[in-house]
Image (cartoon, rainbow, N blue to C red; front, side):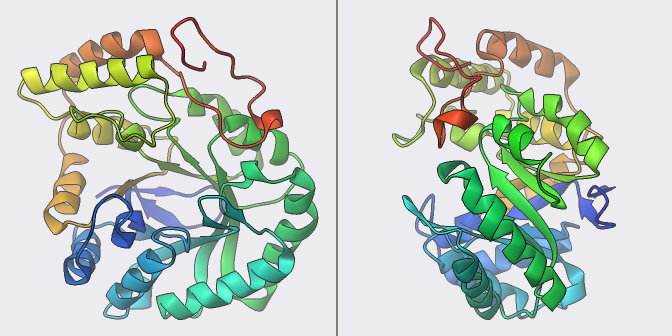
Length: 321
C-alpha cells in the first residue's frame, strides 16, 4: 500500500481508505460480525484511514465501527467522523449541536479523539451558519483535544471555491468529482495547494453509476449520464474486466490526490480493492472507457443551495454540466 501526505496536517494516509458508510446498512442489510471483520481486513491490507458519520445508518455505522476498532490499537489507524447532518433532510450546524455531536460520536466509537472532524454536506445551509457557528466550534474542539484537525465536506465544487478563502480548515472531503467520468476536482487543486489543505476523494464509482447494474432510483444523476456510465461498465465486462477495478486504480493513481475512499462491508471486497492499487492499470482499456464517457465528462447534478450550483447548467441531454 502506498501512502501520501494529507496537506499540511503531517498525516500520511493510505492511497486507498475505508469509508464506513456500508457498515450502517446504507446499501444493503449487513451483519455486524462480518462488518467488523471487514474493518480488520482493511487494516491488515495496509489501509490506515477510516471515515464515518453519524448520518450513515442513523448512527449504526459509527456503532459498528466502534466495536471493530475497540479490538485495535488506536495508533493503527486514523479516524474521521462528521457533524451537522443527521438525516436525509436533518441538518444542525449550531455550535451547541457540533459539540454534543462530537461527544456522541466519541462514545459510539470508543475513542478519546477524532483525527479529523468534517462538517457534513454544508451546501444545504446558509454560509453564515458555517462561518459564525460551526467553524468556531471546530476551533474550540481542537483546543480541547477532541479533534486534531478540521474539515468541510460537500458535493458542489463551488462550495469549496467560495468558503475556503474565508476559513482556515485542514482538509476537505469531496465526492464524485475524481472518477472515470468526472475529473473536475482537478480544477480545485491549485487552491488546495496554495492553502495547504488536505484532500480526501470519495466515491470512485460515482455512487454506483459505474456499474453494469441499474442505478439506484435515488441516484440524482440525469438519464444520459446513467446510460453512458452503464455502457462503459458493459464495455469492460465484454472485455472480461471489472470497471470497479479500473475506477479504483484510476482514482488512487493520481499523485496529487492523497487518498480515495471506498466502502464495503465484505472482507473479500476490501482485500481485493487494496490489491488493485498495487496492480498495473490497463492503459488501453482505460482509454477505451474514457472515450465512451467523453460525451458526459464532468457532468454532475445539483446539490444544496442555488449559490453553490450557479456554474451548473442543463445540457441538451437532460443532465447538468
